[in-house]
Length: 135
Image (cartoon, rainbow, N blue to C red; front, top):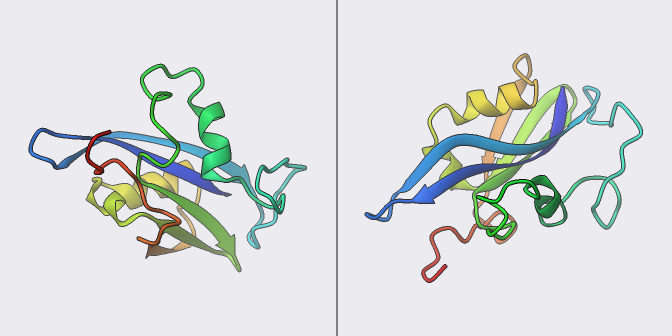
């Protein structure tokens, strides 16, 4: 089982709709049912207790010429947290438009056996710029 951060890669079609590629970029971290990292993990948040989207994006797409031109907050993103044997998925609501998004998250983070609570979050914390004009 893992917790961590993720992005769903998508692009804007000519008619203004989002087209999800089916690709998810993630940074899963092995953890126990309480969410404690299973190994000695180095995190990049200010508190040192998690990875941030902003601090992780550049490294995750360094070898991807097709993606590294995009800023960390361009694509819809989210986070999986584990607590008391449950998975909590905090994410941008646009991800709900991606086919089988729950299944993809469950598989990527190896949380198929857990009860999963989806919490869509359109606050500034999970906003993405993909639909902004002029990018």
